[in-house]
Length: 272
Image 1 (cartoon, rainbow, N blue to C red):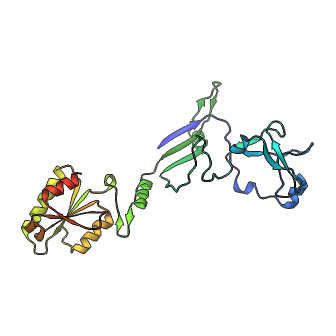
Image 2: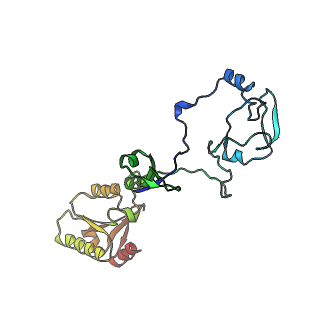
Image 3: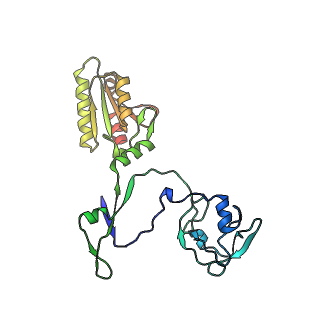
């Protein structure tokens, strides 16, 4: 977790939800002498309103505003000539798909997943720790603090949300608990089947693959369901029938069908 601080004495603050409310038509008429739909920042002598402008609006020229008179608007309005510069310039509206971005590109709206977090801590902890720094004038001041970081559990949740199907998780290989599951199907308790599975496991691990042996003795359906639920990327089945044919049954977690591969083909597939 990283921590930052600032010696600024005041921070721009968004108003609390209860600080603002929509004005009534009576209040609008009293202060601006008009009605909704024709309101604007250009007011007559002796009147003063606080103008908060969106960043895009603050950069506009020759724009149109309401004239504060029902049925009328004012065209060709400019900051600094027809009205003072905005009291506050802020990002106060949601962007719309297709608008121009600050770098000149086009804005596209997509869904995202939050995996990082930032907290503005203020001076609560720096004051408690009596933590001070020297500001630009050389005077000791209590800094405002913040912290940020990546949530490991959030990354796991995001990966699962993006990689799953009706059977369970489909882990990306770098995040999987194991890369390969070697499943033993041995209802007759044939020692040669167990030995072949142990040999294959050792060979896979020697090749640098993170492999695990499932020798719980479950029926194939239950065993395979567990492997799919956990999301192990590759499954290899060692069985009496396969040994007789000189093959292993291989299936990738995201594949619809299994395939029979000999030892060389299997190792090439998994290494690839």
